[in-house]
Image 1 (cartoon, rainbow, N blue to C red):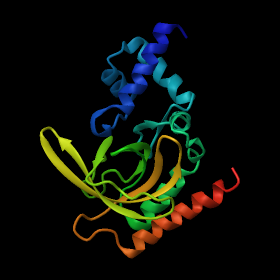
Image 2: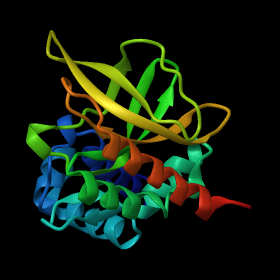
Image 3: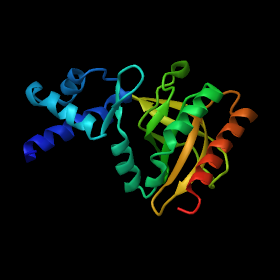
Image 4: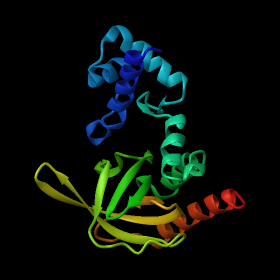
Length: 209
């Protein structure tokens, strides 16, 4: 692949991972338009990215970040061993709680949503790419913490409540599994138990790694 062709393939991938509000693209044409690359090469690049595992499709046919991209991204944060584990665990969380479940990376006072989320449209919830913590969180591996997050929609500040359980840390970040919870009632006992179970599954799988 020539440098120009490589750059255009990267543009196609960037159009997926940086689209506002994780806009769904259900066809190569949608990705190609978002990436603003020529259709003549865009279809080929999209097919190549899918074949290489950088892109995949969900149950509705929408393009999502593929496992190869997930693995590379998490390795960059020093938590690459989570890559093959998180998707089935998030699906289980979604099914048991009926809430939006997600993987996120905490760095300083920011929470960056990872490539995996299940139930993004649950009760109108659309995950943002980055949130700010309202207060400094007390994040300890294996302990559930409920926190408020801030994000902006244009000039308007919005608030989201989440329950988080840190599952892995590195020198630069903390990886967390979380649920978007009711802002009034907060996390229920059953939801906290579900997060604790998710952590135990990861801990048991990665012990000795």
